[in-house]
Length: 411
Image 1 (cartoon, rainbow, N blue to C red):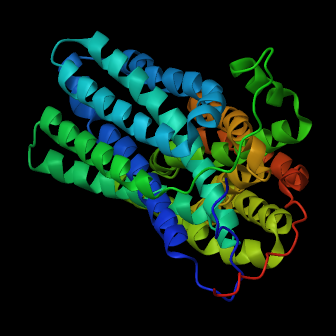
Image 2: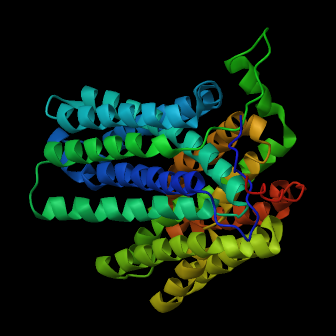
């Protein structure tokens, strides 16, 4: 059953339970960001304790991506079967255990860290799909485009987790204590928050023959779903390359001091978070397709300024436009994949799986190209993908919806 007050008109206040679900969805996006950045903030200390060189560290970190991809492929079936509330709650518990294993296991060697990070990635992947499905349910209930604000919450969580991590490092808090406390705080707060999730829209049941996971795999053959996945991949690539390489490019190609490179990276994150927070108004007014084509062009312009700017202030302006241009594509793709509530879980799973390939393949691709043509010139790959995104933006067009029903008269 859908929620009895899921579609309010624009003039009435959202019902209390819808407001609670909105708050709960924000919390789960924020805690997901906190979990990821808490781990990332202590990577250098764990690397030093295990005496890992860059290549071995890269292989260890690959276990997160392996767990995420395994989970993303299966998450459509998981969420359709158990619902977003139970999936996020269970994955938060798994992530709490996984991060604790990695936080304490590094004293024993590499193997416990790899196991912990694989489980960390697995929990994060299914959590990601399930909270995006819930975000789409809330978005439909509010009858407003707010998915990007949930993703802004994730960005805020990453910043908060990073700041706490920096403070823990400065205060010489042991890695095990810091990450275990962070894991428990994230797990408990998330499991508490999901109690206010809306019931999921009814999912189309799998056929009696060939059901289950095999049933969800058929969504990998849907042209629109695959195009949305490619659209999300392009914007995820733009986001990921900004996060991974702006700092490096400013230092190596612009001869900027390390602090200035970090400032450019922070400017990019701030611009992306700002775009996600204020984007819903543009999406509701102009629609997904025109807005996303416009911001893709904006991102291309920012990248070209960053590549050819020549001086640091121009590169900073490019990073600002690049961050704004990368802000909305990923959350809009999640909304588009959820347009039909019956098939939201498997389609979000497909789209997220394709999109996350950008985070897996982007760093080594830019690094390989950067060895040959400088990091800045390697960013032409990002320009090309955003160009493709402008051409296929029609895949995320909103479906035609019937007008929201008038509220029922008071008894």
